[in-house]
Image (cartoon, rainbow, N blue to C red; front, side, top):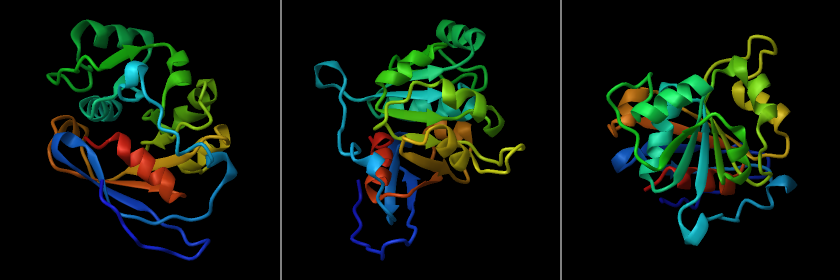
Length: 216
């Protein structure tokens, strides 16, 4: 991963911009940060799978974008749970592809599920459902307090007028939240084509940790 020595005064917002590397991973190319929060004291802990393997992640939403991000994580060496409704999870399990991205096979490291319980053991949560569904889905997830939650949802909540990351903070106040967005297409990301994506966070440590999951 790239490094930056940029520093800003306390209270100045910084953000990470990320770009794709080979295989569709993400690499930070500039950095910034702002205030520290006590609930982020566990950010430095990098949890591994059994036997010292790579970390386990969960992507909530098996649409085109969620599946593409699950593919990036899987190709980066992580074990990924891809959450979907039961009928969609069964479809993906049988055909090893998402109905939203036909023709793109899922690696064995990406496993579909209709069970939210897998979030409890995840070292990373990626939320990729529509913003309007966040209020219903986020409270149902058993989120580990030290696992970054990357919100990969565009748009504004129609009822509150909040952005998806702002709404996520309301329903997961103890979780470190990051926002992933940018001018990209799900199929191009899934196919590993060059693209550009922005990863924004309120902490340099959080931005580095979250971006690291997507890097090969």
